[in-house]
Length: 113
Image 1 (tube, rainbow, N blue to C red):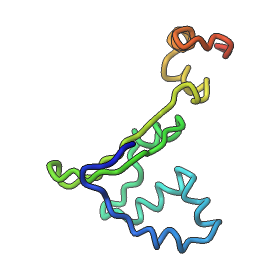
Image 2 (tube, one colour):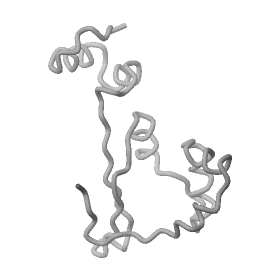
Image 3 (cartoon, rainbow, N blue to C red):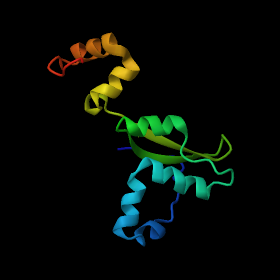
Image 4 (cartoon, rainbow, N blue to C red):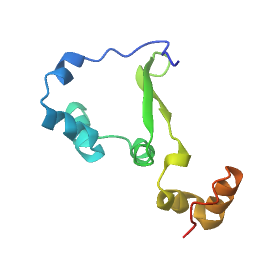
């Protein structure tokens, strides 16, 4: 249901040519960051904030090229916090915030260690 205004064209043939082991490497955030840093002129990998969202179980739904902002690539990211590891949520929300979040969503059965 999400479509970019200015789609980013990726060379999917390059990814299709990877063997299964190489494709699995791309699923690991650290390996993907190394790959991105090899492709970037400044040698930077995945941005730190994106790394955190991906570690929370985030999924990138679509990419868009923003011509009004130096042609950067935007990504629409979805994070379902109800599916996120409780320890990570407690780290960011604190124990009281996490307990309130669960109570709001009727998830009190998940323990607040």
